[in-house]
Length: 337
Ligand SMILES: C[S@@+](CC[C@H](N)C(=O)[O-])C[C@H]1O[C@@H](n2cnc3c(N)ncnc32)[C@H](O)[C@@H]1O
Image 1 (cartoon, rainbow, N blue to C red):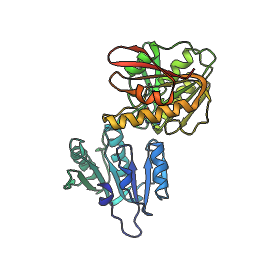
Image 2: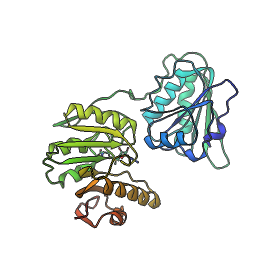
Image 3: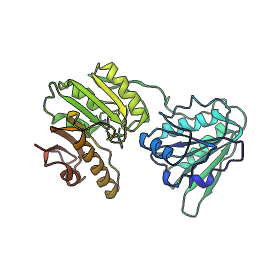
Image 4: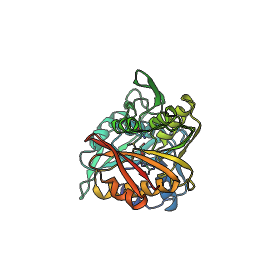
């Protein structure tokens, strides 16, 4: 839906801002369009499609000067502070008369984002609904902003978050559950053994809660990875804060790492609503865990109690045990010895 709305004349320049909600298979490479994405695998795929200028960061717009572009396009996501940040930054980098195009489907708040942005852009939002029910909102930048920037909760700022009386971490908006301890991860930690002297991988690390706990449980070294740029930035900050030995790297499900590098993998994998998507994520994560674990290593995984993760795990591991189940979550141990 977004691709068709992007029109640029010769000499004009645009920016497409992409997160996990953008259907990239519809995107056609255009020389005039740069791409900014916060997802590691999307940067790879979009580059592979033939786009020339593709940047991976936590929606860092600093490389784009004020009033420099003719168009910014974004398919809105669930994260309100990220969307507000993108709208505010789009206003800054658009030339006077430049257009912001927002796209979304029903109930995603596209119209509301358009209404809020219209005060900033000093124009009324032009809204269209496509035959398939998608909504496209177009705003044209008029004049200079005064005080109508949208509340983005200081999107770019990494700050201290007190998770409980004993634990203050570095975190920020744009990360899964950025202000709290995930209840699944908490349940996982309650069911872990000691990791004295072990190398532990935190797969899908977020701000690094499981990495911090791995160090507390005696890990010698922790390798953390996520596909989300905001998670990587905060996890690096927490490695410094908690003096964790190891490294933090962006990846798609740890596929970039060599075989047999870890004793332990900890994972609270991402799950989507659809059964098909869930089983393919389970397969991708299980396969990757098998590869990066030493032969006698083990993965400890927490999933919602209803997710049939075991089925995919059994394709890659000889033993799949349910260590604990509190009806909301289950903790699995995957091993091959
Ligand atoms: C349920 S959260 C768990 C976060 C963190 N481990 C915690 O306990 O708070 C799942 C994490 O997986 C990450 N993720 C999703 N898809 C991924 C992928 N393909 N590769 C790496 N990480 C991914 C998400 O960005 C998110 O941080």
